[in-house]
Length: 484
Image (cartoon, rainbow, N blue to C red):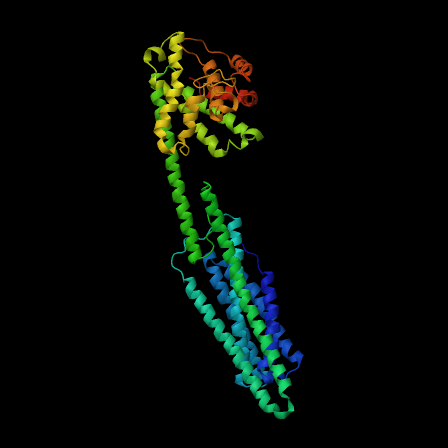
């Protein structure tokens, strides 16, 4: 819960006591006739009583209400206390000091006008604390629904502020005119002018200070909202749709935050649908290739899990971290099943041959890598560099390339081979080695690991083989979990 009482409330109460005490002597000759003790003692007692009542009542009344009602209730509660305090001091002065009703009304007006500014400021302070609490606890108010518009609030605040300022200066001018008429020639024009100007400067700066305090307080709240809104939108622009704007007010800004959250949630749902569609598309295409190949569907699942394990590990290594972001790792995992999509273009007599291929047959079989890359390239069209299938194209066309340049279809070497293809090469060869085929027996895990190690710097990227060494037991676990 927001903390109470706040340091700001104590400061405003002390400033209010000092302002009302001094202002009263400026606008009312009856107050001016009292001693400092007679002026301050009742004020101190009233403000202490008001502070005590506020401390108890705010905690046990305002803070017990729903968050949506606390700011408005806090303003009404604080303003009501100032009104009651003003009435109490007015009746005290009329009964104890025999003040006329006009003097009593001047005191009451000073409490009402100052109480308005203090109550607005404290309400904004409580709103700020409330927003901080909601943010810290990762929660929000409900949808705003109907609310009083900010334009209306600004108009009321501006109008009331002008009325109170005009009223305050009117009382000041009236008292000064009475003083000049009563003093007559006893006060020189220069002294009178200086005294009046000092009074106007004091009252003007004091009232301006309270008005500015409200403006600055509201500006702080606006800054909090705009910072939250901009930060969440920045995350959304960067593709992170997990963040939400805190709905901390029931006004236009709360409505804006609520609509922003609805928009991001809608984008998140559509993104999930797109990702699901991508996954279905890839698995459908992979299934087409699978129906024509003598490899099993488990091979597809195993290899994509190998690729993800390698990519996740390498993403923590400095030389690979910039390339292997979380998004890229996920795309590699999704795209890996299409590594042999080109086999749909290989004749059945070669693809399904139950024995070892001849040299000519192997040359035809090798064409599947280029066929797969070309097929996906045609599917990509003009979006070749932005589509999620870009990684599928890389994997399909380059997973048979070798680090030393002896691979196919292009004979690429080293880092010229796309990282996706280098990852798939290790995953595909390991799974081919440990899997039984009609033309060969399955190798043991240990034998497959040894072959991969021997291919370091020749067939495979040395850095990826080093990662494989660390993850060999994870590969064995995946192979066991998704066995044929």
